[in-house]
Image (cartoon, rainbow, N blue to C red):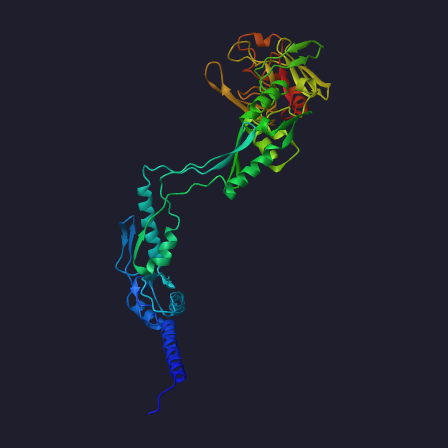
Amino acid sequence: MQKLSIKQLIIITLCLLVLVVGGMTIHQRRHFNKNVKIDNVSVGGLTAKQALKKLQDNPQSPKIYVNNELVFTDKQSVAKFSSADEQKIKNALHSQYTFFPSSKAKNIAIKPQNVNQDEVSKIDQAVSQKVTSLNNGRKAPVDAYAVYENGRVQVKPAVGGTQYSLDGLHNKVENEIAGGTLYLRPVYKAPLSANSKTVQNEKAKLEELSKRTVTYQVQNKKYQLNCGEIITRATYQNGKYHFDTGAANSKIDEINNTQATLGKSFEFKTHDGSVIKTTDAGSYGWKISKKQAGKTLTNALVANKQTVNAKNDIYGKGYNQHGTGYETTTNNGIGNTYAEVSLADQHAWFYKDGKCVLSTDIVSGTNNKDNETPKGVWYIMYQQTPSVLRGLNDAGSKYASKVQYWSPFTDSGCGFHDASWRHDWSKQAYLAKGGGSHGCINMHPDVAGQAFHDLQKNEPVIIY
C-alpha cells in the first residue's frame, strides 16, 4: 500500500475538521445548549419545535412570592404556549447560541401569546395588598420640588424613605408568569431628584412667573403689583400652580380702606345743602374679597395679562351679594340717582341724575325699638307690583296687606309701598303708639306709583 504524503494527510485532516466543525455548528444552531431552560422548563438538547412541544405539555402553575412570602397560588396555569409562539422559541434559540457547546445554566423568560389577564389582575391585587401591608409604619419618601417663597425660587431636596414601590412588579409578572414560580423583591420607592427634568421644569415655570407684574384696576385707580406683592408661596406640580396669596391681603386691605364703601358711613349732602354723616349700618356698597382677588391676580400672572379689573372680585351685603355702587364714584360713592328720606321731617326726595323728580311726605316706622325705620344707606333690592306684605302685628297676630307697589330695601322687610288703609298722614303720625308703620316707608296712593317708577334696582336709599 502506497503511503500518503504529508500534504495529503494535512488535506484529509482539514477536510475532517471542516466536517466536524460544520456538523457541530449546524447542531448548535438547531439545538439548545444542555443547561438552558425556558420559563423554568429544561429544553437542553432540543430543537425549537421540540422545545415548544415540551412547553405546551408542561404548563406551570403560578406561585407568587413577595420577599419570600407566598401571596398567590393557583392550580391552573396563567400562561399557555401555542403554535403562535414558535417564532419566540426560535428567537430564544438564536439568543443562546454559542459556537462551542456550553454547559452554562440559563433560564430564558418568554411571554406566551395566551395569557389569562383576569388571573394576572388577581396576582397584581395580591402583590399590591402585600406591599401595602409591608409599608405600614414605614417612612414615605419626599420628592424634590421647586418653590417660590420669600421673593425667590429654590429647590427643596428629596428625602429618602423606607416604603416599598410597586414599580416593575407588574411587568415582571406579565413577562415571567409562564415560569410558574416568581420571587418578587420590591425595591424602595425612589423620590424625584432635584436634578430631574420634572423638578427643573417646575423651577423654570416659577422663575418665569416671579418676574411678572400686573396692573389691578379698581374703579378709576390703578395699582401695579409684582409677584412678591401678590404671592407668599407658590409651587408648580403636575402641570398646575398652587398658590398662597397671603401677600396680597395687605394691599387689598389698603384698597378697601381707601375706596370700598361697604360697612362705612357716607358723607352726604342733603336736599337743603347741609352735609351729614350717615350711620354705617346700611347694606349699600361694595368691598373686595381677599380670596377672590388673590385668584384673579394669580390667574393674571399665570396668563401674563397686563391688566385686570377688580369688578369681579367685589362682594356686598344682603339681597345682592355681588355688591352695589362699584361703577359709581361721584357723590362719595352714592352717585346722583338715589332716594333720600328724613325721618325727622317725615319726607322723601327722589333724585334722577342729580335732579329731584319727586318730593313727598311719608310715614315711617313707629318710633320704638321694634318698628323703627333703620337709618343708613341701603339699596332697592327688587320691585314688585302688585304684592302682598306679610308679617306680625305688635300683638303677635299675623297680617297680610295687599299693596300695588313694593320696593324693599332691607332684608328685614322694610321698603317703599302704598298704604291705602292709612288715614293719618301727619308728620307726627309715626310718633304716636302704633301710629307709624312696622318699619316701611308708607306712601300715599296718589304718589306711590310715581315713586315706584322713579326707583330702580340697586339704587341707594339714604335714611337719616
